[in-house]
Image (tube, rainbow, N blue to C red; front, side):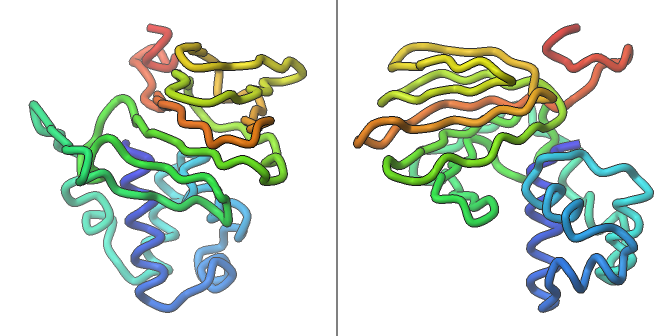
Length: 193
């Protein structure tokens, strides 16, 4: 399942219906915290959770998944067509490098992290993550270790371990981030098959 596409669709339907996360939590039986994580593509919801959300939103499951499951053989996204995606109240800017209408094994973004903001709380998510520094300097905190990243440096990590990025400079930083949420037939992340 394309976690980003589903998350964006759920958030769009909820906001178009004028519902808050608390409203949706009361009607779906899920917590507002869990719904926030789903909408910010931090967790992959179970099918019963998606069904409960769909019912609370007054839509069918098929409406949620229309155009999400069949990826094209080739997709080209021109630089001017990149979509800016907001997560939480973060000052970080996420630019989707693929459309949100197809189901891919990976989800690539360019993330811009401005200087001068308090560090984001460490978080975890399902799947693996690849990062490539495009410009600037960042401290990558993964578990209890910190790695200083500069232009051209890359990382590959387990997203289930709490992690965050901190911009310790006075300059903005840009990073390519590729999430892999898909699981193989043996249950392992696709990147470890």
